[in-house]
Image (cartoon, rainbow, N blue to C red; front, side, top):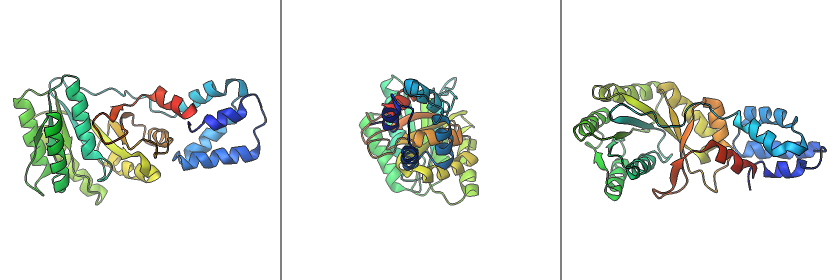
Length: 278
């Protein structure tokens, strides 16, 4: 059942929505990770909704909270370079592999860079994915320089005339200055070969407001162009996408719903909102 379906069912055919009903809706919205400011704003707008057009009116209200920025891929003239950032544990490395598999299925030649060199498990994970999906992975020494790996991968992508280069980055979150310096270094060395066209931030939907706080640090450190929202399945609270886009004004471009490469798709805003309402 959608997040707002109970609300619609209650107000259909009646203009008598009791104070207790509004309180219940407020609690549900907060539990769904909309956050206090967005919940307050939504309730103020929902008070004006008439019963006869509840679903259509709520669709319009929810749509206004989503980013209006382009959800399509930002393509390069030759090789499109995508840098993937995020906190460890969000599904960042898996998302790199799933994105690569998705692009390869569309007929593109893809190279992946195992730039999370501080986690041996992340490098091994990407190498395993690479063998599984048939995509080349460029890696370096354990605890080596992530920028060096990214540069080598850029050269490999150039030599092989690849359509896409996807760079996994370190997810350590010491402080904003360290993070900014590390990501800027990766960007600087890669751009000796190619322009970085897209920076995708991976956010775990189940972390809710904590995920938003982490996201703010990354968006201050690097120019994020889109979001990959992971773990948006039966256990994830559906309002988090609204909160992310309202708070950061960055479009969600991809969603991960499971562990397999098939559990990854482009985010469709209208379908998402209809899911909240139905």
